[in-house]
Length: 394
Ligand code: FAD
View 1 (cartoon, rainbow, N blue to C red):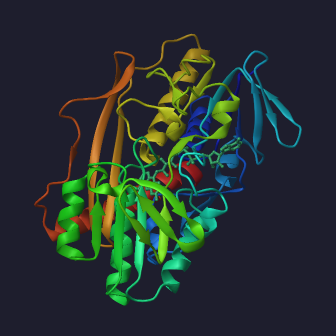
View 2 (cartoon, helix red, strand yellow):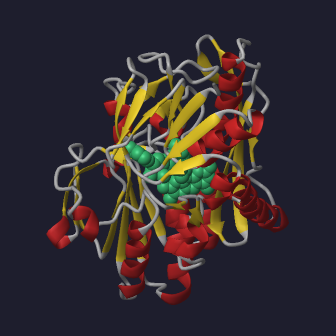
View 3 (cartoon, protein in one colour):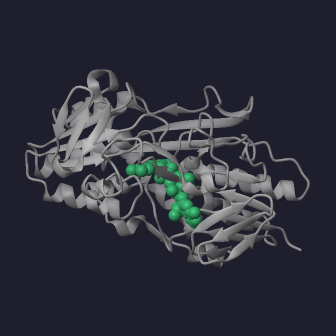
């Protein structure tokens, strides 16, 4: 009969893969297993935090994917048996598969930061999975008095969306500048440098002088513990008493990856670079943030590109053909104000068992770009989000 492919996780990686599988092979039985009925996208959620858009604009249902012929199971997957090739569902159901794709996104490493657990996240939101946490951080910023201190703690790599803590600092500064100009944003970092740093820092000095302070690892930015009752954030050298504390904790692959046996001791999932088959369980493909994708950043753009390449590779493999030779593109857009954006483009190819960047193929926005260019890139960011979510969920 028709080949059966199960995809677990209906985010940018898994939902793209399911939809492309069905598009490329209409006879294939494709099932998308997703715990939530509504997907809340992280890209542009920093704009929600800054009061620039509503959370509803981040939310997408699965009706379009179902209309495209994918069977959507709105239930969590609770176990995978790679030997029997079955996925167990929280409602007691069981799905068998010829090929399995898992794209469960991230989990937080709650043990990594003393004082920070799921209860603490209600006081000191991470807002690193979009939804209630995004809205909670927005409400806290709205309730904060002028002159307040907003602390953002940024983790060491690897983590979901490398530039997003700095985009967040920028957009929060944008909202404070208008209504609470005596306030301050303090970014405490577990790193000594960050993605697109020169462009961010130039924008901060132009748009938000004195509003954002960035403390690097070697300047004592590493957060070693938090005290949620008093909103205190402790580094090696200092105690910072925040009015709003946004703690972005260390991360690892989503729990299903461990249940399926595809995560290694790093907490992430090693894969080969052509079809993203797990190096631990070769019949299971892993996509998106959960996987170790070489030079490719953990981003929605990346996850969606991987979903397309994986779909093509699975269709080829089931037809007994080699995977197509692929190049993957990822563009990270950053907004520092609604009309001020810049980007970093990377092009990647499988080489030496890894996804490596194609030298000279990508690039960053110019550091000396003018206002018209920044405004144009802000529009491109918006266009990308609308086009990609329409392609996946529309
Ligand atoms: P996810 O999108 O997290 O999807 C995983 C899905 O799997 C979820 O829907 C989850 O419910 C489901 N799931 C997990 N476990 C199970 C289970 N056991 N059973 C059933 N379902 C399960 N990227 C960009 O490219 N551009 C941006 O501008 C951008 N901005 C960002 C801003 C912020 C503040 C943040 C936090 C991230 C941003 N990102 C951006 C990164 C982007 O959100 C992630 O890289 C992307 O969501 C990864 O896709 P994914 O499919 O791997 O995981």
